[in-house]
Length: 287
Image 1 (spheres, one colour):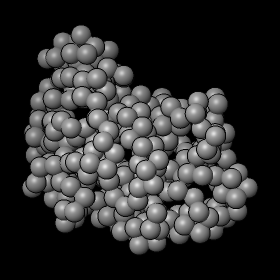
Image 2 (cartoon, rainbow, N blue to C red):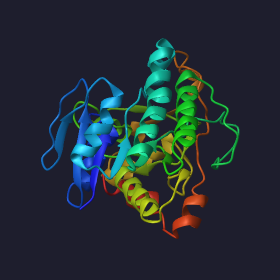
Image 3 (cartoon, rainbow, N blue to C red):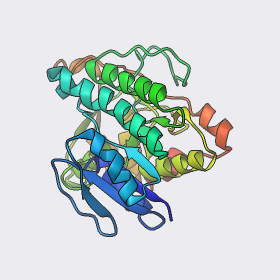
């Protein structure tokens, strides 16, 4: 049974993904400041010294690292650019070096914020044009991972799923509002191609089995607005869709500039694996 370490183990993605894989892998979550425990998953306290990771990988005989660490809050990244560039840029590059030297497969989780939003369904060869500090720091991380580790996988995605109580996902927030019969305002002019974490995990495993490397977009086939995504969840829950209220992003003047179209093309992934991506409605039914 392969051994997987989720680096940034207290993150939303790690929490959902590690629970999903624990039946078929020996799963470890590497933790820094926040300590959590998940049944069937082993928690490891990570050193603040990144170079100590090499010995840890050897000690636990890790086969795969999934890097979920980073600063994902766009506004926080603007306030603390140095931290954003360290966590989202420099750190992934160092992880890539260590994984390469340790002969451990690295899955680095990237983002769909890397472009200016002028194009629909950007592919892996499109020129990056990040609009804010978060996107610039993530672009730095992608580049350093590829430079430092020829066998690494950089996975560009935007995921949803059932998160823990201390870190709700976008879909969790929609579901919570609907269950309380409260209105929730969602952007009608911001588009993306979200994928359920479980499907993301399955797609990632397929790439690993094929000894894939480099950059892959893993996303749904459907491009839709955040508002339309909310409507789909309301319909799935048999809740009043009028609780999902459309709003244009320009109305939120306190937000950092970000792309209005973050949709990605998954054509490269499909050509590589021959794998079908489940329709988004089927993925939403897993919530």
